Image (tube, rainbow, N blue to C red):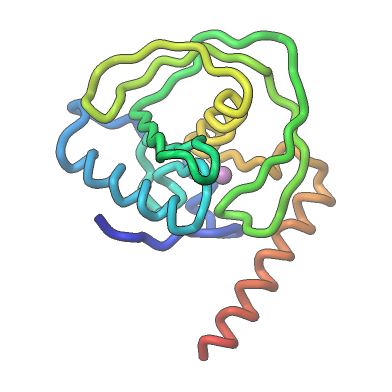
Length: 175
Ligand code: NI
């Protein structure tokens, strides 16, 4: 396992549409998911899409266990939302590719998912609560959409400027 670099806005790769994994869940895909999980834990975060480490494949990892509870890693290969409820609720979201920026996004409170798990088994289940929020946020990444794309243009510009500024300071301090 290895920690990979997480790319941040305005990196154009974050706008790419990720392609489905072909040929099922191979060792190579499991290795990618292991790296993604380690990268996510180190950040730390609760969800990560492969494109956030520059890999444009439809792969997501997640862990929604509370601090102090045992880890509960979840893996999603080629996830699809097959049903969604009309009721929405706001939730304050953040993103490892947009560090230090948080804002409320309205999303459907429940959705039915279909995906392949770590073993390559096909799973179909309902997600609700934080799970529903997180999987919708991560699946947006697979379409090249960020949570700030759900906000006003002004808020979006401010968020990108904030990250650019922080990255500049970090680069200067490292020099
Ligand atoms: Ni994100």
